[in-house]
Every structure is written in structure tokens, then in C-alpha cells.
Amino acid sequence: MESYEVFKDAFKNNNPKVIASKLENFLALVYKLSLGAIRDCGSGSRNPLGRLKCYGEGGALL
Image 1: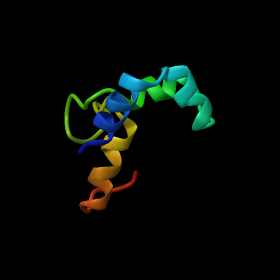
Image 2: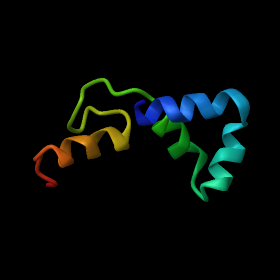
Image 3: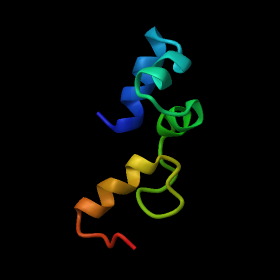
Image 4: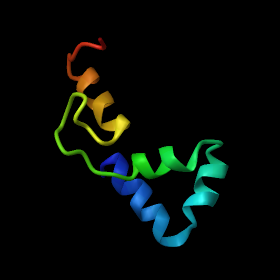
């Protein structure tokens, strides 16, 4: 299961504002994390967690 799928699944049973509050984070970031990636890596990735996958596969951090 991809990271954005976890958030989308959580949105089915919970209000995104409640999820953001529980994570002690901004609502905008929670919405951003629920988006699927346009591309797998790089700045075109809509989901910041999607880019972390690339770093673990030998991608450069900078």
C-alpha cells in the first residue's frame, strides 16, 4: 500500500481536520500527503513521502 492510499483510506472514516490535529500537522500537508504522485521521483512528485522512496533506492538527497 502506498503512503497516499493510507491517507485516502483514513479520510473515508475520519475528518481530515481531525487527522491533521492528531498528527499535530497542518491540514494542507495532510491533503498533500493524500495525493498520488505524478511521477515517481523528483520535484514533480505531488506527495513529499513519494520522494523518500527514491532516496532509499540510491537517489541523491540534494
